Image: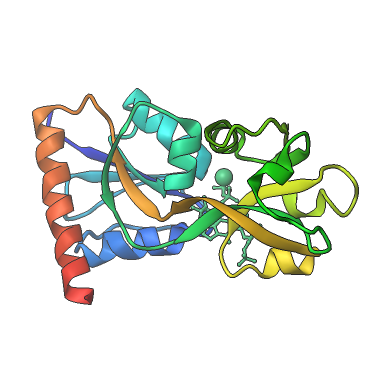
Length: 213
Ligand code: PRT
Ligand code: ZN
């Protein structure tokens, strides 16, 4: 059986467009029919799987996908056993702590005993531990920024890009705990043939990046 490289990318969201663009710029052609969950490249031995970003590290760990494109924030939070192969330079953002604007925040110790709403309990927990702060991590699955204004939590820990979401929810950014961008991750159990294909793709990715700089 001939070797095929299975590449997982986000189906629809902030990573999708740039992930598809990068694959196309690498000269890989495929039929990107709307709503498809899987497609085959026509001029490279690859298949593309369209998934939710949170699921990508797990699929790569299991070897269902051989490589994937995902935010470092998601890759670190899910803590799967995968290799981070290369930084891709797009979808840059940061994971930050925000508190109500009127809060007279003086430093991370102010979070002692407070409750913090987040979808990133693991990264937040590590940060608090490293700073010897004991806070109550309140895990919620979305609309994190609204939590302080409705009395659900004292602070939030969420992804920030421009900062306008924090601002429009009456919050200010007080600590940056993690800086992220899209990365290429790979399974630790690739066959020689799959590795060879990944290296070919990586070579093209690096060439695309060099051409842009
Ligand atoms: O459906 P699926 O699970 O696949 O997607 P998703 O909704 O979980 O993720 P998505 O598409 O929103 O984001 C995918 C990845 O893009 C994230 O994991 C980050 O690596 C990266 N990224 C870059 C961002 C942002 N910028 C961003 N601004 N992810 C989220 N946001 C959100 C943030 O959560 C907050 O609500 O945008 C808001 C803040 O933006 P600003 O500009 O107002 O600060
Ligand atoms: Zn997601």
